[in-house]
Length: 199
Image (tube, rainbow, N blue to C red; front, side, top):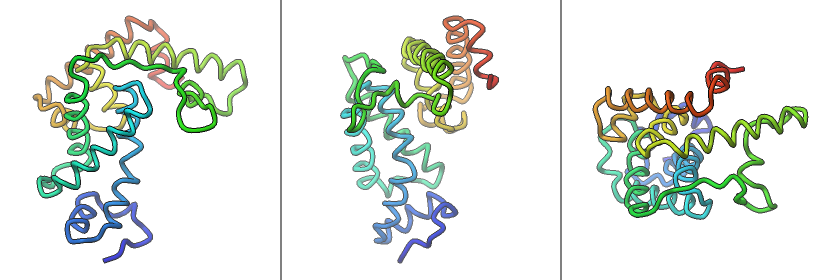
């Protein structure tokens, strides 16, 4: 079995089925498709690039071991649930922190350098980085449950998927997002509402 050129059109569940049938290239497509989002979540929750990489690798090890446990629901939601469970296991007793000055990759790039603002005038880019740093600090100050809902939503998961990841009723996931947005609005003031509308 071989993956066609238009892998974007192949659904995750079909790729997993192909992997289970022995097509290792199908797993490679899944890893390439979902690792960036897993890494962003893990980086925000652990605060360390090396830890985030370890988390992503462990998620894929668990996917390989437990691929028969996927029930055809949402593959993306399933791997985020695996990621969440692993993050909970490894963070017991530790409070995750985010350092925007931490280096990511080679070449001296920091997480702050990766924040939106590329292509803006220097003053506008500096203002944007400052805003993003304030937002990162405000998100980090949320309760773990609210922070997780906010970050999963930022990764594009819908609220039903988030509820499944957190293993809570849909209304609980919605309430957590409501409280998270309320706290962010209170912390960041009117700027938060303006930014959310796409200033």
